[in-house]
Length: 153
Image 1 (cartoon, rainbow, N blue to C red):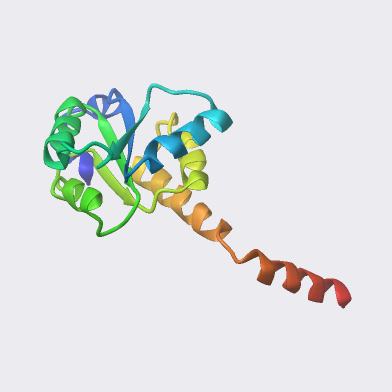
Image 2: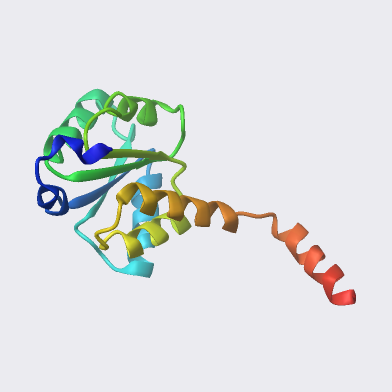
């Protein structure tokens, strides 16, 4: 149980939930822009665009994020599992109240942000949001033709 480090469950409930979107290039800030268009702005979410400046230091950037949010419940969502951004955050996977998700997409973010204010178990909220996002991904051509076939019966 992740909360075993705390003597009192009220300490866990008082943690702020923060979300960091991190990607290669400007994908993180771009998807944040889309999220804000749909859900409004939130100081709970920030984007980190990696490698767009020549002197970008991924190790230092990740270290700073982990320090700044060390007292919060932190969800980091990266673009690619196994990519350099994800791998750098993966080094912190054992930190308490740290959750790392790979496969950044808009539906997942919308689901997550609409549920994040609840005081429910954050792992369960992340898993449910991931499951719903996965179910929505489809080849529309196939779905369209399948629906047409079903209408013929």
